[in-house]
Length: 239
Image (cartoon, rainbow, N blue to C red; front, side):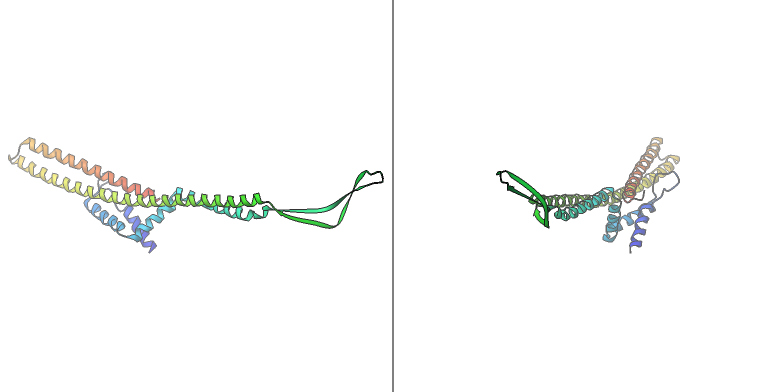
């Protein structure tokens, strides 16, 4: 299924080619075929999901946020494990005794304890700070997750908008093709009428100019469609 979807995607993006070498217009058959392909994408949840997955995998922003969240995960683990630093261990090995001598003067004697003395205490400040650090890291990670979800939603919208725009541009090219064909037919009719003496030279020139204008509109519409298709290719990482 994945291979089929990938094949369809590639066909959609490379299906169109120039009608002739160096000509920036698309043929009617190419346009009609492309419209069917793009419409199929927009009506297929499986293909759309595959496109979204591909775009998300190519997004540097999403990758950067993934790394940031992984860093916060590690930070949370480190802060949770730091509880041991809240304890302090003391060791007593020496003894000190102060006594009075015959002249009522004090003096201190030092020695080793027969048994080593140990004491364990808790630093409450470190214990409280540890919990605070954990909460801060969790809050940062949650914020990054929200940013990532917003970025994913925006990318999904971008994909849909690009494909709908592309479909609209293809329909525009199709209409321009029809207009161009009609203008050509009108020019041919007026040329025959002019040669037969049934139309003036001015009418023939006007018909010829209308053909040029229709051709210009067709080329512009075709280029706009190609630009949008290129944007889709870039978003999918195919260019």
